[in-house]
Length: 355
Image 1 (cartoon, rainbow, N blue to C red):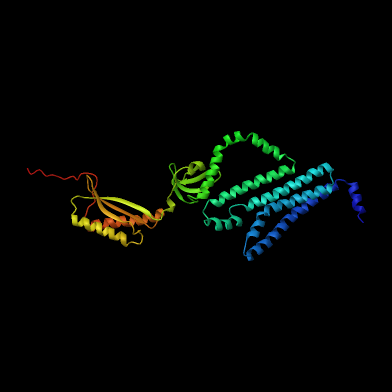
Image 2: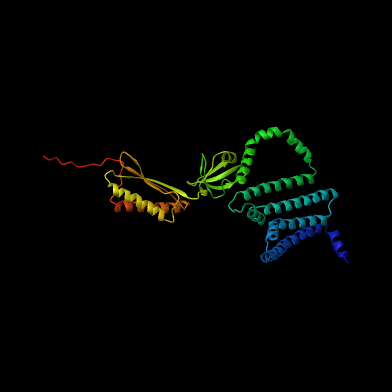
């Protein structure tokens, strides 16, 4: 039945290569159709399902799957050409190598911080979407996946892993000495993500830097300063330093010193103190437990009136609004009580000569 087919191939041997190319072309066409159909079904199923875990897992393998179909097309094309056994041994090894890469690539994608795996893990373990624990674990897991993938590939190509490990043992001391800073930074990063002195987006201050935390990696932590500079600090340095996390303030302090003139009537000054104190205590924006309004010191150029309280608002802009409001109220009260603010300079009086 196929005598004509074999006759053509015998007459024109180059047709073998044409057919092999057609096989690859068919798989290239199937790649788009197959992946489009499969992932359309996955999308519908994941929408109706309670868990998106399976859908996200398969989406992580979307690009590896497209490449796998092309590789299978090339493999079947080579199989059709019926090459020499030695060549086919190498081809089979290449196929198995790509299968290893296929699974490694897919799980590498799935171990990203945005995957369903880490979203669920973050809710159960840490409970904070801004924590740096999940990104750090993701990086560690991705690193392990890459190491495992290359290890299995090396074993597939009969590379002596034991000899490599033994070689690491012989050079271990030199490696440890060369990498001691890197190791210290890595463990510093582990301390930071487990003890959680801060999270992404927190305003922190150390002995060397102040700003907002943007990221923590294996070796370093990135902090955005208020001048919009990005500072990279080794993890070992920041882990061994004292860290003030200003974002954890429950209330925020306001400390003001206002100098009043000595010629102010004493009763009016007492009224100012009482009225300012009452204004602060009546305000829902002020924490009621610690409010201090006193004449604290007698300075060279005036009486120092201390105004000390804590706002319930801790963000910078909201804190400034509360502080501004009470600063303006203090000015109004001083004006109403005819109490003037002293300035650190002598008053000048114009003296008329009686002659």
